[in-house]
Amino acid sequence: MPDPDPNLEQAIRDNAAQPAKASVDGQSVEQHPLKDQIEADRYLASKDAARKPGLGVKFAKLVPPGSV
Image (cartoon, rainbow, N blue to C red):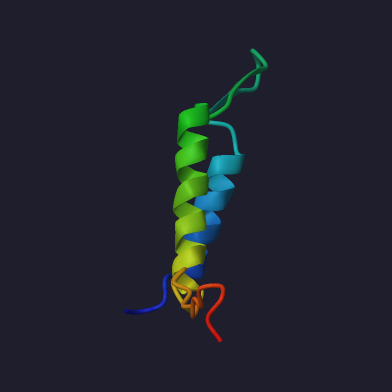
C-alpha cells in the first residue's frame, strides 16, 4: 500500500482547526460541529495506528499456576 500523502493529513488537521464560517464586518465566526471534529480526530488517529508495527496484536504465553 502506498504511503499516504502527508500534505493531505496536514490539510485535514488545518481544516478541522479553522472555523467553518467567518464574517469580517459582522464579526461572526462559526466552528465546525463537534461531531465533525470528532470524526476528523478518529480518522487521523486510525491513520496513525495503521502505520505502527504489530497492528495492535500481542502474543503472550499463558502458563497456569501450579504447573512447573
